[in-house]
Picture: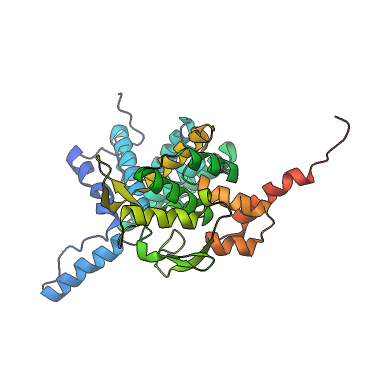
Length: 348
């Protein structure tokens, strides 16, 4: 690929470029002081401070930022411009190229910009976010491409019924059935669902009491409890499905939803968020739907849509789902009202 020069300043050596902030400052840990403290107790405290600094962002966010920074640094290498500190026009041109290639939506470009800015902050360099060229370019991208997210379709009640009915009655099917039914009935985020432990789920008279230890909107781990009601039909009751999975898998403590080995044995480690997303796509296919239109979010969206259609209030829905913004819940309620507001029986 032809090397291009965007500025007149001389290019740094390959070794220098590769050494800069080494994969996002080793996943956003604080910048290392030039001289480590001489006292052993302070040195240990420094290591702990770095560890806490590295945990300031959720693991998925750190991985996304690391990937975005690596991509930006590679692009800067080809353009022969320094990635750190990067000039405002360097960042602006990079964002414009992301927008022009047609593969990145504004939400994805926003993540790339956030990663670049975080890398600069971690290294003690000025953030390019407020640079006039960056701000103008980002405004133009949002104006030209729009900011409306591409929403995946929700899995509705009838879809869930078809999907769980098609699952086998072996151990794998029991786990997947329990995961789908509980995930839908509690409006869980996928990270919340796969992180559940046996001790977080307790049967009560009318259903399940579930403790969510940590979530996207609760990074400090304050936790919250939600209730999941029993289903009207035994074959789709989330309480019965979870109890049957725990009994058959002989799980007494640890992760609730676990991986299986190649022989069908239950492992100790939990399923991943990627597994959850694949399972939802599989459920969509079992229900006769196009799996490309569905994602891990489709369970949560399906619950919220069904609750809105049933006339539940914003407060009731948010109490279960943990939405931090009323605007998102109102969108589901608004969509549920659209058909009712249509003018029917006009002569067709």
